[in-house]
Each structure stands twice: as structure tokens, then as C-alpha cells.
Length: 591
Image (cartoon, rainbow, N blue to C red):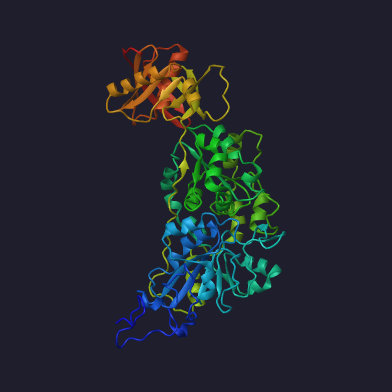
């Protein structure tokens, strides 16, 4: 019944009010002093009267401490598997706002649906364990007896980074705190710690790397990941990866993604980029898109920082990277590599430093496609995987080991049953990838038409020597100057009939008088209307019609070569090799 205090209810007869607030007193919890609650504090599952509102038993309190997007993503990826199905563990997230790279963390955590506790409330509760993927969390108010499990947010301790607490540099990943317990992925990392930080080394535990395990286990899904990135059997997938800072790939050459996209034929390559979350956080997604606008126009796929980079690695044919951890993960998968930057902040004697010695470096002023192909052809998979093996041990066991360590630190028996599941890497959901304007070079030889398409965001190719050049634009192209200059206009919309496709083409030619032809898909074919009113139907034998840009290029090549647009020709574009049938239909009046 009510006791006169607003919103409070006495325990029912026979029930016992806990003496220590939200958890059993013998578990080390404490009830905050009267009046110690602050506005915005969580009341459940932590707080002085949380026992009144809770549903799950909550024998232990685990605080997941996030400081950056990188550390938050690691926690969100790993923790659900570690406490899966266990109502005894209350998991509460807390955001330490002291990082220069804290932007975006709140949005990420709220989108994940976690319970978020104000950071200063950490000093008013007594967790049984704090788990963080950042060695820089502020532990000033944390109980002296509470262990802190430090998960790596990269691979080992291979990088020197600016020290947020001073003007110098420090070794990334190391928390020099007697409460810290580091989870490491290779015995050599403990030895490396012992050389400079004997205290943390003595408390480190060999666990392995859950990301490495997931990458290896997800290799059978490579075709699915490639499809998500638009890389079919006809095209290679080039993955550009950059860590953060002035010595990174983007720090040294922010326009490399744009030059790669512009230099690689659209029918032979796809280019994707994985950028360190600190790049997105420090400069904002808006500025990342602004700086890489030309690359996006050229078809670059930007993999979001919170999801998809492991799958992109599995899907890649070649990786262009730097001294960031993603490059080392690529080496562990045996991927062909090129280094576009390699900073002196890489710690000597580590696998990453050794990788910088054995992997070829990209020469920015030499032809890029030739260097990529050479890297693939001359790739020594055994050499790079041997280097990466110095960063990982006993693959496949990281999650079970990590769960055992976590429950050991909480002094709680592990849940009965099977080990944590090993889930596939989630498929990437990139942004970008559409190319709506392209330079198209066509060569007609006998009954064969060879087509090479490059993004119009790059330099205009030379015409001559039997090669014809034209600009082709999709109707979705936003740059009106390009649309006004295009010789061929296309649409990706498949019309319900030939008549509808013809009507679209006639209207388009009327709107853009500089175009020589307009091409639209129709069931089983493409329809091109020429400036003189002729209608040409094209179909590909043995498969659905290719994109309208290729059909338009075949028709345009016939016009430039002075050939009638009729008969059968062999189309070659990258690895695509197929017969195209051209049929000249009646003329229609162009307004």
C-alpha cells in the first residue's frame, strides 16, 4: 500500500527489501546515500531503488564504457555474444565524452537500443566489471576494486598515437592502470607490453581476436558480399582502406580514391573505401562526402564505419591500404596488398612494421590499373599471411575464451550450454556506387565492338587510332552541363513496352538537342532512337539485356563507323563477351 510518498509502494507481505539497492549486498553493490541521485541518472537497472522496477534478477552489473565510435562498435559487436541468454548480468552502457573523436557515439548507442548511463553516474554505482575497447576512458571515479577489461580496438599495440593527456605520443591500446586486464590476440603482444609496461603485461590474458575469427569463418560467403558491393564475376573489387591522422592514406593523399575511380574502367573494376571511424567522427560524414565527391561521382562505394568493413575485406580482390589494422586483417586473409602510405608511427618490431617492409608500395604517379594488376599477379599469399600470423593465435577460440575471462572477472559461473555463436560478418550496406556520366571509347573491328567506359569525373580520354569517343549520361545525372554535352542519353528504368521506351527517347531528345541518340530498356531488349528518327532495337543473346549504356555504345559505334545499325556483332567490355543483335525499325519524328 502507499506510505504517503509519491509513487512509492511498500513491498508485499513476506517480501524482503534488498539492503543494497539494485543488487544483492553480498555481490559488492552499495546503495547510494540519500539525495545522491542527479537529474538524468538511470534508476533501473542501476540506482538506489532499482530493485522495485526491475524484471531480470541482475546479479551482476557490467558497464560497457564507450569513448569513440571505434570503441562503441567493438562493444556492440562482441558483448551480445558474451552475455547471450543470461538474465543474471545487467549491461549498461556509459559514454565517456572526453575524446576528440566522440562525435557520433550517442547516435550509435541510441540506434542500438542500449541502456545509456551518464558518465558521472559511474562514480555513484559499484559495477562488478567495466568493459571497454578504449584504453583512455576516465576511471577517476571508478571503485578501486572494480576490474576493467580492455578489449583491443585494433590489432595489438602496433601504433603510436597522440597522447590526449599531454603533447607527446603513446602506444595505442595500453591502459596503465592496476585495474586493467588486457585481452590480447598473440603471446608476442604480452612480451611487447612487458618491455615497456610490465604491470599491464602481468595482468593480460591471451584471448585471440573475434574479428579475425569472423573473417576466416565468413569466407564461404564471399559471393554474397561481392554482390552487395556490386562486384560480379566480370569485375575486380578494389578496397581502399585508411586509418586516421596526417600519416594515413587519406592524410597523405585525400584524392587517391577519386583518382583510382577515374582510372579504372567501369566494366572491369569496382572501388570501395573503408575509412577509420575517427575520420568520420573528427571531420563529419558531411565533409567526408564533400572531400570525396569526385570519387563518389566516379562510383566509389563508401562503407559506413559501424558496419560492413569485415565483409568488404572478404569480398576484395586487392586492398590498397596503410598502417591501419584493416590492412593487417587483409594480410591475414591473404589478400593482395599495395601500401599507399605507411607512417613512421608504426611501432618497430611488430607484425605491422614487418608488413610495411614486405608489401609493395603504390606509386601515385604511375598508371594505377597496371600496379593493381601487378600486385594481384605477383602476390605472395604465403608471405603476407606468415607476417599476419604474428598477430593472431589459435583462430576460432576467441569468443569462448573471452566469455570465460569476462565471467571470471565478474566471479560468476559461465552460463550452461553451448559456446558463444560464431556469426557471419554482416553484409555491407555502402553508399554511393552509381555512375551517371561516363566517357565511352568504342573500337569497331570486323564484326566486333570493343567498349571501354571511364567515369566522366576523370580526364577526357583521347580519340583517334580507330577509337571513337563519346559522353554518355543517365537521365539521373545531376550536372546539367554534362547532360547538355552528352552524345548518348540513357535510363535505367525498364519500360513496359517498346512504344513506351520510344516515347521516353523522343521526349529526351527533344529536351536535350545536343544528344545523338537516347536509349531505354524494354522487355528483352533495349530501344535506341537516333536524332534522325530511326529506331534501333538491340538484344543480347543468351541473357537479359545489359545496362542501357552498353547498348547505346554499340549503336553509337555503328554510327561513327558509318555502318548501318543492323545485324549481329560481338560485344566486348572488360570480361563481358557476348553477341548483340541490332534491328533497324521504322523512323519516328523527333521534335
